[in-house]
Image 1: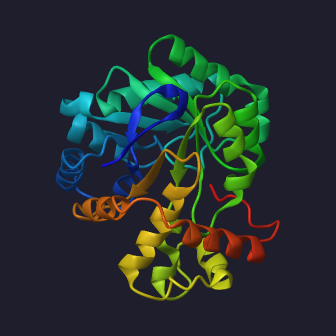
Image 2: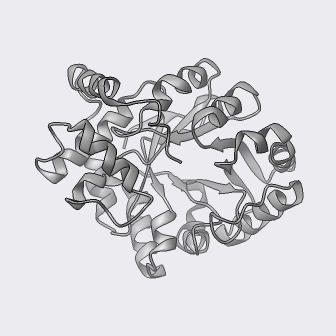
Image 3: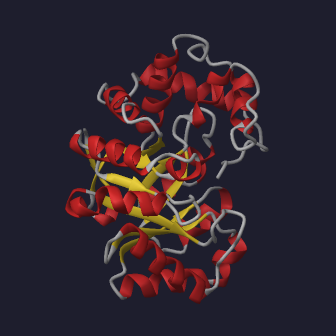
Length: 298
């Protein structure tokens, strides 16, 4: 698996990382998670990204890989309670969240702690930022980052305190390519792409019931990429390779609950960046169709 240097953090991260939301929110067994993650680590994965609000994701990850701590970079996110809809942005709440994450992940330090899509207003109050800086000062985390999109992500870059940006980048979500990635590159920040295959929203064949995925499905109906209606594996390949072809992207976080799926995706990534003409065709189509309302989807 190709490794890329995650900006000024200096971490050599696998181009494909593992996202922990699905395993925590879809009732997957701990045994399956252990099989999935250890198989991925054996194949070259070294990035796992999770969050407190992803059910029991952190606990299962800790059980699965704590004995291989030196083989993996552990990223998590804070600012919510047991669900994403319970905001917890006060100074003491952020620090308490980090302590819980350390316990669940069975480690005495984290490689990266990120504010989880907090608003521009919350960032401006600086209380949550100061909590992350305190955690870094105390050795609870090596680096701090912001996970989010739009103007809040732009502010997070410009304020100069974060080491990384995690933001939505895909064939159906390209706002960041123009709005924030050039700024992040100029500041040497590590860039983590979330939702890099747009949740494969096109594969449902009809409007998905999951409201989280619906905006991407609707956009794709208008974008009408010529590769969407063809071979399913080929469409995922193009989507994933597109995201990893975006200048400044260091790793793309993909979640799965199936032990063999990560290896399948890894083989797609090994084919390298898209040919320039194919990449530019996807960008041109986005520029032709997208409108001001097509903001980054957190």
